[in-house]
Length: 421
Image (cartoon, rainbow, N blue to C red; front, side, top):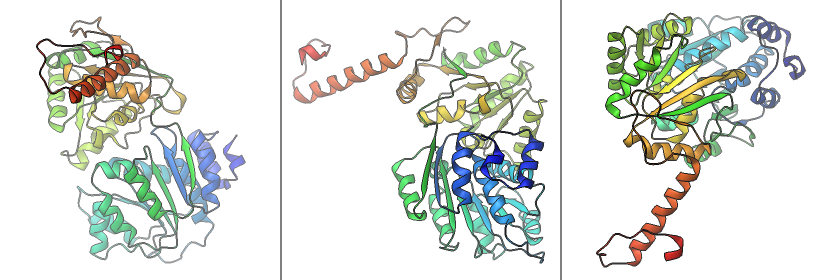
């Protein structure tokens, strides 16, 4: 199927052609007709599926069909709410690219910077507003933003909104926009809290689901490197001695860990910068721009800051620290292997990380190769694969059941098996 077959208007087709896009992704193919019919949509799609264009293109078409207000003080007719500054900027760039041949205007607002320029841009007249929750509520409370004319509302990355504690802010914002509207709701995962939120703000939605979160892109080559915690920096430097690794996104657990790792890499003459919540917006944007341009080889990021990092042809992701939430692993490695391209995702695993690895294998239902042939190996007792996870959990459950039935301490340790219970 081509974009033309989705009945998109000529200005959008011209913009897509200029960007080199000819065929829609599965979520675009499913979502665009639904949005054009002005129906509410519940989309479940992980990163890298083309989700932004799935709502941006039909929104631009619906808004373009209405007469453009002559007044410079245009009413804001569409609102996209997103959890991070980086993702907000990325969405604005997408609207600019797809809407370049329309007369629509868009603006982005987020915290961490002065509000002056953002307010000035809004005052010039805006059709589409992309915002993070905190700054939006702040400007609404100052009566600098009017949400009374919103026709289309998009809640993007709803699960990350929950993780970051923004759900109450989201509810406050929803209470300030018209009840009669079209709502598009997107989330990579659907825990009960997110499902409940969706049920309260959507009206007879059409559900679109692409690539369940437990799946990982088939073209991504994954590997687990067994390594002691103290040797993780040495292993990273060793791997980066391979000059064929042109760019790599490295994930750490903490902001302090990201800064510390950058210093270690710089001492090894490896060009690296960190991106996390404690960095100023200018510093974060400068690092991201350098990484996208190819002048920065290594970008070290925390999970929250990494939302919105969309780099064409990013081939390598390294989990310096494994995440304690298995779905986060899928999001991380999904930064590579985008749009059908191949990619590599390596993960460092020390003794403390092993429970997290168990959870990841259980979620993905994949056997990830364990690499011990490197200068800093930590030999595991047994190969960490999906079947060993199942056996380990069975043994733990049986042991717990036996412990409940017996209150007397045993003189000798006992192994628990199905036959003995």
